[in-house]
Length: 409
Ligand SMILES: Cc1cc2nc3c(=O)[nH]c(=O)nc-3n(C[C@H](O)[C@H](O)[C@H](O)COP(=O)(O)OP(=O)(O)OC[C@H]3O[C@@H](n4cnc5c(N)ncnc54)[C@H](O)[C@@H]3O)c2cc1C
Image 1 (cartoon, rainbow, N blue to C red):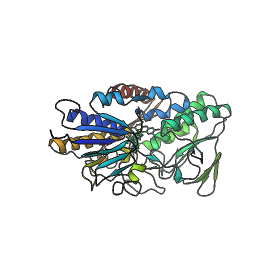
Image 2 (image 1 turned 90 degrees about the horizontal axis):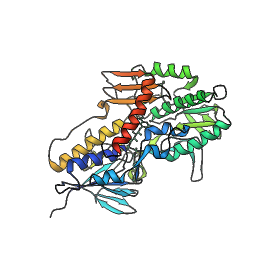
Image 3 (image 1 turned 90 degrees about the vertical axis):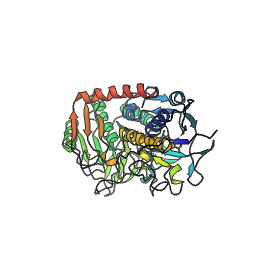
Image 4 (image 1 turned 135 degrees about the vertical axis):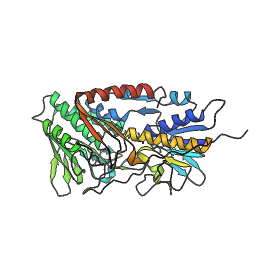
């Protein structure tokens, strides 16, 4: 009997999980009529709902509340999960190299997300492997838990707080949500007089988000910040960070007792170790069908994909690749792999023209953001501020976790 086409998916989060389950349903994996095999290689066996990491440091969520095990939904869809680290991809041999062995593929999906690149700035990020670090991060669960411990200590002896996104960062939404939630917590604890809050960003103006000109985002964000007493500085370049001080490129020192700065992202080591797979920063250049430009059986989705900024900014800003955009890319990639295997037309969805759907939470209020296209030109870009945005985010979190842990993507 001829062997079935093998699809290997690296990463089991927004990109990898979505692609694997979409492929499972199209290829009927694990059934008698199966048209292919799908294997997920993931260095973790849990899915984390990353958008909730903005709340974890304030004690509003725990690890268990925002994660679910990957194995049961994948296995019940006939997808094999191998919990290991992809070390590199051998593009000639069409194999993923891991400590658990080599996994041959006919089609490959890279959904490995970012490497959080703290090394870009001395002192940035939490202390790690003997490298000193003085700020916190909420980019993954472990970092968010460290930030929670630091916040708990900070409340005993409060002082200035600095939040933001450094030069080259792209995940601006998380920085905004975190600073707004932090301001909300400061108010709840009655600490406004003790905790001056500074927001530092590489963006040319508030509400730029790395994409620019999103409806009334500038005006609205400035209004929120002014109301909450958050001081802001745009087009900022951080030179280095010392204990309790951010040192700016011009030499100015901004004191802090609690700091959370979003770092730049790079592609993961498994990509940079695989010549021909990624670009100089480790992101993968794909066409509008999320197919690698040179290696046509390789696909990528989510943060792993290279997206050029739509316009040059005074200080470099990356383009955010949100969870929603990631899932849309993953669905297109899965469709096109299935089309290769089963026959049928490819679909194309240029990144710039994916619609935007986002909720920016501010603790007890927020902003619902929606646009027909993530990048300009846009037909519309609407922002709806109000407490319903906070409730919508809570409802979405429940909906997402309830559906995804049962294998619905
Ligand atoms: C604090 C925060 C808040 C956010 N809030 C929102 C929001 O409200 N709405 C929204 O739409 N988006 C939000 N985002 C963005 C969203 O989290 C990302 O778009 C999404 O996680 C991207 O999915 P991904 O699968 O590409 O990457 P990731 O989610 O980073 O997943 C990559 C996966 O691959 C695994 N992996 C990496 N390398 C390897 C390897 N070599 N071998 C095996 N496995 C590997 C990783 O462990 C991980 O599980 C937020 C991001 C952050 C940081």
